Image 1 (cartoon, helix red, strand yellow):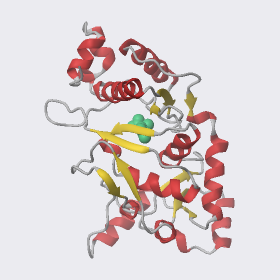
Image 2 (tube, protein in one colour):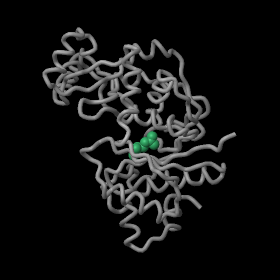
Image 3 (cartoon, helix red, strand yellow):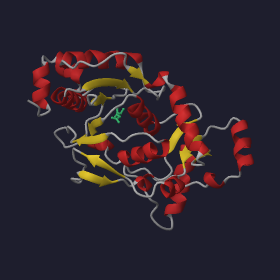
Image 4 (cartoon, helix red, strand yellow):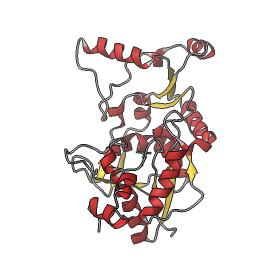
Length: 290
Ligand code: GLU
């Protein structure tokens, strides 16, 4: 049997903090315990927020923590063709449509709909796509795209769920409400998620699913903030004919006020802690490991 494959997949849009250290150390521990491999993947599809200096800092901070990963490192920005192929597969199933509303227009549409009754929100609290672009005739779509309008390519969630009526995953960790074992996926809770944009030919959901499969990842160890996203990932895996990894979601490191850490909070940044004299073993202790 081939060894299990783990990955730590940060986005280089800021410096790593204690929460990242916890996730990376858990992945490294699991890889060591199981005789598995540890990959590092740079999730840099958002060109407006990702910067080379943050990527360099990720390498430096992880090496300082004592984590070793395989090379070459996969950088998502270098593989648009892989994501395009997946998108085309979903399009060929008739599950993808372009929507043309701006963020401000979407906010207005949601407000109008909420005047009558509550409008559904996704597990992250964002409103479901409220527009009617899925009903535009093909000629009108082509006209709008040809006119140079920005657009987002969305998954027709209702149609996708009709194709894949029952879906679950194996949770070796725990969801935010104590979910574990076989968890029923509820992708419909997300509405018509974005799969790509005119200027970015992929999205977090699409690229993570494509990459985990291409890289042979067998166990995804990541924070509970991504637990509900797993429902979308499982749906895309089935639609694309990709294998399902096992999932192990872990609790989040929180600040003293109980808030999720952010890349802009200096007190919990690995660089700041290091500058203040902390060593790798202090970081392990601070996140409750070892
Ligand atoms: N790139 C994502 C992040 O920085 C993590 C993706 C994943 O683990 O699935 O939060």
